[in-house]
Image (cartoon, rainbow, N blue to C red):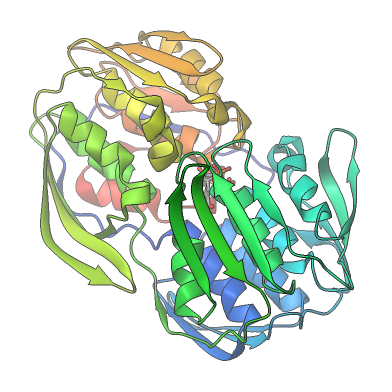
Length: 443
Ligand SMILES: O=C(O)C1=C[C@@H](OP(=O)(O)O)[C@@H](O)[C@H](O)C1
Ligand SMILES: C=C(OP(=O)(O)O)C(=O)O
């Protein structure tokens, strides 16, 4: 489902020190996977801390359309009665994945080796995004796939009745490609193998192991190699979803750039495959302390204590990009307030997210007085002690662009406006009230 068609403009104004506790929502990647794997297990999976953002609600609805029983018991507290590996049935209608690349790509994988027919659609943003990166490897299982020209949505999948396992080297570092193949491999006999040159977020591997699948990861001369043995019976597991480090990045950024701020962000995942922003911020000299490190729901988590302080520009190496791929828009905002230049390398994938995020950030930052250079796969931001603001940013149905510019406006001399705050509901429905409770001025 797409968010409401009426755009909701919003303005962020220069704010006094931020303080308090920011309880950010559950991790989006883990929430999608908990619903999908719960639906492919036999029996009841209980999920706590589920992100109730539109992207995840669309996946919940898709699982129901495919035959699983998905029930909300309270805020963040959900259960899924799964149908087992190979147990999905043809849905009565098309499956609309709204704005969610993760939703559509993982669910295409999950249905690819079950002999049912499913048509997928999405909003204007998702309909522009490349899908051949997933449908190409899925067709190797024996799946019949028809897509709109250029490999775009709408896509119809006729799942393979007699699937064969696949060995696939991913052409770009993408957890969505990897996960789609692994989910398809669940109902193929024998071993399905994915080889990636850079490790990407490993939530699928962790959760598949937790649900009892035979899966192993090795670093080989070919790259990072994941081998899944097909046709397991998945056993339901309670899933406690940790708080999302990608969502935490927004209040963290606000505290770093608004003078005098000090905030606490508890229970945030510190999964090393998601930690690149925090590694980078420490290199920039950010005052962040990771307190009370512990394990929750199979993921390392910590409480973040973040204080405003001087920051310096850094060069982010290309091999770190996968571990912070969704955090570059907000890093570019933080970099605008750092002393010196921040160079972000190996970020070409940002051009095929909900929007072309390099272009959206570069254009919007320039409109607010920041000097930015970009190439196909790099972005360079020149920091300054003061940032003028006073500009307007176009968000292109992209939640992370919307939130990034609202954070920018909390520390600029003049207010920053965005054309539409609506897409924020996809990943962080409570963003505006949460930021206002910390002291932000958003209207
Ligand atoms: O697997 C996932 O949950 C995700 C993987 C990343 O996409 P890619 O796999 O396209 O890099 C990321 O940008 C997205 O927000 C979530
Ligand atoms: C890229 C993102 O999500 P998706 O690919 O699931 O739409 C994101 O949340 O930043």
